[in-house]
Length: 424
Ligand SMILES: *Cc1c(COP(=O)(O)O)cnc(C)c1O
Image (cartoon, rainbow, N blue to C red; front, side):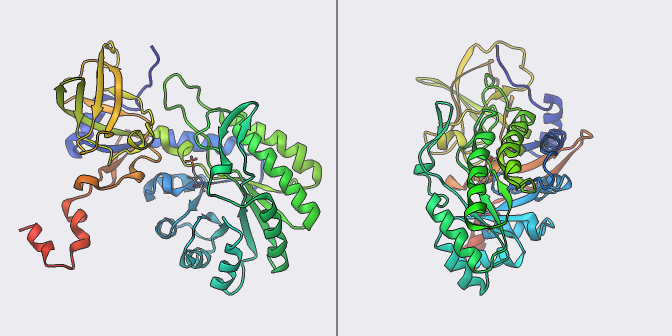
C-alpha cells in the first residue's frame, strides 16, 4: 500500500497539543533547510542564481528568515506582502514585486524599498512613469506567449486563458520603449504552469524564455541581466506520485542555458526562481483532532479544523494525504468523509477515503499544507485561524504565530460601541 510518512511522531504531536491545542499548522525546520540547501546546490552552476520565495504561499516571518539564511529573496504581489518582507529585513533587489492589476501606490512602495518591479501589463509602463516620476534603471516584464503549454504532447496548462503577462508583440514593444526611456537592465519573467510534477517543466519554459531573450538582445540591443522562471514546480500530494528531482531540473535548465544563452554571448544572465509550493508545502502539516463521528448515508469523521484552516480541498478538490497518528500500520478498511464544521458541504478534507478505524480524540496529520495552506485562510462562519508552530531541528517546538481570538475577529468593530458589548 502506498503511503506518506509524517515528519514527526504521535508522541511529539500530543506533547505540542498539550501546550497549543489543535488545530495547528506544524512546520518541519529540518526539512525546509535540507530542501533549500539542495535547491541552491542544484543551481550552483549559475553565478547569479537566486530563489525569491513566493511570500503569498506562507507569509510567516520566522519561516521567511530561515529561507533568507540561504540567500532567498522575497517575491511579493501586494502591499502587505511588501510590508512583511521589509520587516523581515529584505530590501533592494532581494525583493521582487510581481503583481497584476496593480494599484499605483503599491508600485510606489515597492520602488521605495528598491524592489525589482515586474510589469504585468504594457499599460503599466505609463502608470509606473507617472507614479514614480522616473523609471527605475532595472525593470522586468512578465511574458505570456499564449496558447497551451505543452511538454511533448501533454498539455500542462493554458496560458492563453490566463490573465497574466504581455503578448510577444507587447513584450518587444515594451522593451523598446523602456530602453528609449532610459531603462538599462532588463529581466524576463514567466509563469506558465502550476504544480507541475515533471522534471521537464522548467527546462521547457527556460528554452522559450532564453530564445526570446536572445531575440530581444539581437533586435533591440538591450541588456538582459536575469531570467525569472517563477513558480510552478509541484510536489507529490498523492502517495503514488513521483517527486520532482531538483538536480535533474536544474541540469535541464543548464543544458538549455548553455545551448541558447551561452552560445549567444549571454553566459552572464542570472537565473531566478520564485517557488512557493516547492519550498514549503511538504514541510508543513495541519494537525487536527477527531471530535465527532456520524453515521447517516455515509460515514463521517468530524475534526476540529475546517476549510478556513486549509481551503485547497474545498476550493479545487485538491488531494491532501491523511495519516491517523499511531495507526500508521493498521489496515485502511474504513471508508470515511473527513469533514470540518462549516455550513458548506464542500468543507471536507477527504471524500471516500480509506483510513484505519478512527476513534474520537485521534490526531489526524493532514500532509503537505506548508504552502498555500494557512495563507489561504478566511473567516467564514466566524471561524478563527489556527496557530502556526515550528518543529525545530533539535526537536523542540516554538509558536511562530498565535491562534486568532474572538478579539481579533471582532477587532474591525473596535471603534464602535458594539465592540465592548460583545465581550461583556
Ligand atoms: C503563486 C506565484 C508563485 C509561486 O507559485 P508556486 O506554485 O507556489 O510555486 C510564484 N510567482 C508568482 C508571480 C505567483 O503568483
